Structure formats: structure tokens, C-alpha cells
Amino acid sequence: MFSGRGIDGEEACRIGLVHSLADDPEAAALGYFERFLAPHSASSLRFAVRAARAGFVARVAAKLSEAERSYLET
Image (cartoon, rainbow, N blue to C red; front, top):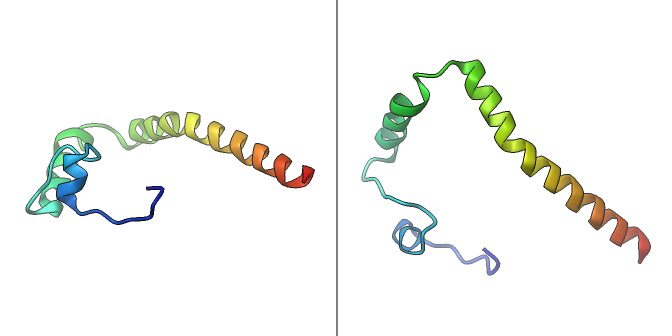
């Protein structure tokens, strides 16, 4: 990430960024949707996404405030 170097799927799997590779990514994504997402209501998925993002948004806002403060003080 820090170097900006691209990696392929096999390397991403080898270093633990992904846990599996698919010969047909579209079929794999549709299978995941059918198995894990489709059984839930749209509103429950929306609330789950909102809850998952809440901590991330708070951390980003804090870092932005820190960067802004640093910029204005120099």
C-alpha cells in the first residue's frame, strides 16, 4: 500500500489480503449475495452498514481535524 506497487490476486491471497480466489468472480459475488445478503431485509443491511461505518467515520473526522490543526499551526 505504501509503495503504490500493484499486486495480483495470487499475491493478495498469499499475503492474506484475501482468503480465496475465484475463476468466475461474478458468479462468486452472486453466490455470496444469495447465501449471506439476500435472506436479510434491505433496511437491516442498511443499518448494519451504517453501524460498521460509524467508527471509521469518527476516526477519519478526528484525523482530518488533526491534519487541519497541523496545517494551520505551521
